[in-house]
Image (cartoon, rainbow, N blue to C red; front, top):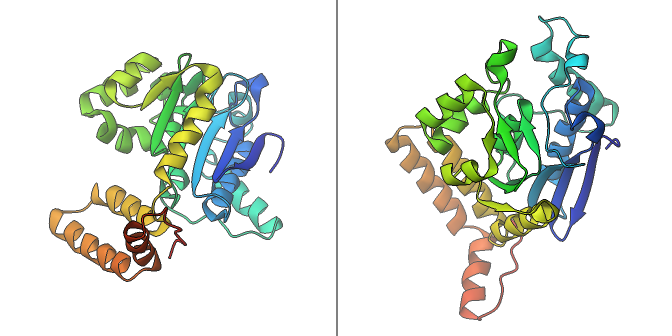
Length: 272
């Protein structure tokens, strides 16, 4: 990772920190490519069963660095970040980004956003892609794309956000571009807790650890079922749920979970 994207593992949690405080953690194309690489690394991290995404210097992410955006033609802007991610990943001998969907949402582990200060534009999209959001008292969210002549750039606010807070509330935020305070985000259920700024990463890590105490296999399958279920009909969903349940029944994790209960001890899950 570069200095602009910090990566660390703390007690079973991979922590990805956007570190451009002088720009309120706004994303250049190069920074975004490194961020994608960090999410891929966290998904594969053997030392971590959960992920926390945060920003440095009192900001989560102020969106796209417009000075960097101006250096790329409008026709190339939608593909630039993906091309740079692939080039850098190949150069480092790593696996390429899997096409389609959102990397954050598709991470097989619980992902928690620790939001301190502004999460604007792309920053609000990143937060929306996370499974859970913990906000500081200074957190503010804004999907201000309409003020730049755009729709939400990753598609999270046009697909995930209505499912998280309801269509009317999502439309109001996306069409107005207005800021959403931490308190109002809590009232809408968009964030799960509001804490003091100094405690937001710690609180997010605690939430992530609490979500990762169970079987990693069961957690991955449950997460896949829940997100895919937003697109499926009930008959297909129930069939996929039965398949996932059969996989779980045949797993080492299920045998360990039953044994731990009967022996009155903490389970030691292997994720298979």
